[in-house]
Length: 225
Ligand SMILES: CC(C)(COP(=O)(O)OP(=O)(O)OC[C@H]1O[C@@H](n2cnc3c(N)ncnc32)[C@H](O)[C@@H]1OP(=O)(O)O)[C@@H](O)C(=O)NCCC(=O)NCCS
Image 1 (cartoon, rainbow, N blue to C red):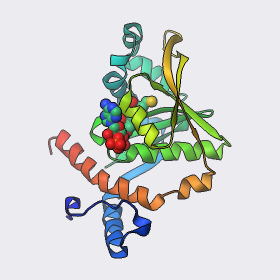
Image 2 (cartoon, helix red, strand yellow):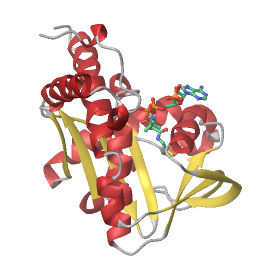
Image 3 (cartoon, rainbow, N blue to C red):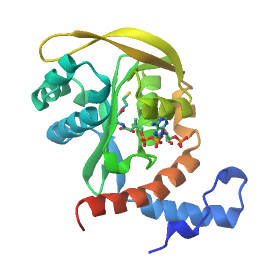
Image 4 (cartoon, helix red, strand yellow):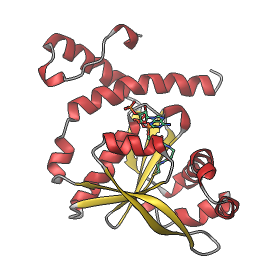
């Protein structure tokens, strides 16, 4: 097994040393082999519900009003997943669902990654896929709602070219009816689908591949392997 830690990261593969870039490319391909983005299937429902429930309670519950936290049970997430799965892409690592991104009209609706794969680059892959799907539907400006105080997510979106346009009121659905909360509205102008697909594809492969290697190790450690 090649150790990625011995290889310095490529900042700009298009202008880097060719031999070095090809080596990095080969390693990234190997590391990315088991990383799959694919449309969600109905059989993914429980895995996605657990991911969404656990991720929400870790990151959103501390920022949400107690009445909303009370309502966000597994059943609440289960009742809201059905209409989302047909418009969701899942990320799989070693055949385990570790992330998903759903779209709704012109919106990135939900984007969640399992905690061990934060920082792996998979969020970028899922978001790019979501944007490409919106672009193919003719959306020019995508938007999403980020919980106020979810600084990690906001930073992630900003580095992906999104702009925080400020606080807006949102009616969030729950299994007990809608509830009013505030959120940060973020927006991003979308390039054409072709541009989105080709944009930095090489760099993304390297980024995701190299970091997926670390994610593999994190997952193995969590499983006690
Ligand atoms: C939001 C999410 C998809 C982002 O994916 P990720 O893999 O964690 O994102 P990245 O690691 O690529 O980027 C996070 C950035 O925030 C930074 N960051 C981490 N903690 C931070 C904090 N407390 N405040 C500000 N920035 C922070 C990181 O350093 C990184 O920026 P950098 O690359 O410039 O160093 C993922 O964290 C997640 O699933 N979170 C839980 C669910 C969620 O909040 N979803 C978003 C709903 S809107």
